Every structure is written in C-alpha cells, then in structure tokens.
Image (tube, rainbow, N blue to C red; front, top):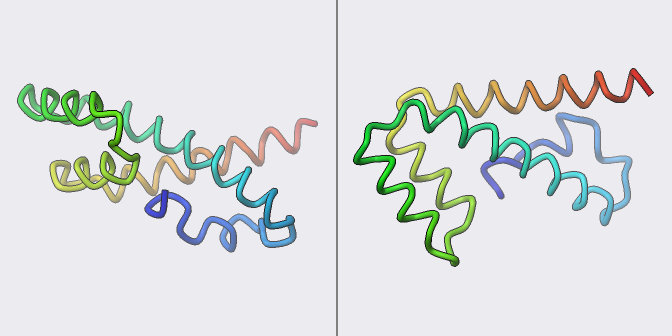
Length: 100
C-alpha cells in the first residue's frame, strides 16, 4: 500500500529493523490505517458513492491502493483524514510500547 507506507519506515524509526520485520510491521500498520480511513470515509460519502465503493470492494482483484484512490477522488479532506489516522495509529503504537 504505497499511499500508506510511504515514509513510515523513516518517520516511525523502523529502519533499524531487519527488512523482513519492516515488511511485517508495515503490513500491519498499513492494514490498520486502511481500515480506519475506510470507516471514517464511509460517513462522508453520499448514497451513490457508497454504492460505487461497495461495487469496487466486491471485486476480488481490487487493491487497497485502488480503494484509497477512489476515496481520495471523492472526499475533499481525504488527505487530512489519512494524516490523522496515520498519527492516531502511531500514537497508539507508542502508547502500547510504553505500557509494556
């Protein structure tokens, strides 16, 4: 998920991890951000856009990047939502690490 993992390794200090661990962590982070953005975006779509999104999600070959591109075209504040959710996940991960 390029739209999600861009700069996360550097920004979140993951470069010290092995390449395989980076891939594993990025996959987990990306899935979490993707789900959060999707949930927030649903409230901002009109009925026709929701139907289009449902149709897109029903296609097995649809990638998360395609879904994110769809949302970006239809939601004016999509970039802000994405940034907010990236920060939320980062904050939660830091909190989880500190509580261990």
